[in-house]
Image (cartoon, rainbow, N blue to C red):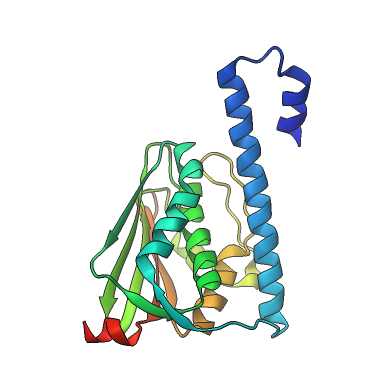
Length: 211
């Protein structure tokens, strides 16, 4: 609202680059708000056992690439490079909306805690009947004492991002609950000032197991 008010008051005096900068910030703020509302709605359904979902066969690569494309503007605002690597053409058993929610939260978090001109990788591979999806950044990392708090809603652990981005502490809690409902697990490895790796597994579809 603040940026839109400034734009309304000053658009005749702003040059093109200033207007573009303000519009990017407005777009990011509205997108983040929409994502937060969607996460809150989904989390409330999980907590009240009202979450109905279908498990279907999903091609992993298109979903990952779609999510990266969706978050590309957020990454570009910090000159962060996004890379995708898929060692196989993996098919998984999952729910598309839930998978997108997890990917969006993990990649968005990586962008939030990575400095300008950093690199984020999304790597998908096959392991023991499961797809392993890793979101790897070279950002600021997480202190060891805080790692166990990340997936615990009662801890309400939030950290300011490298560009003063704010969070709710809900995203990772939601990711854990969704992944476990889909039959997978999620964990994190991190070193302060070197980066973090959030990884999760989901069951492979039959055709992937046979490849």
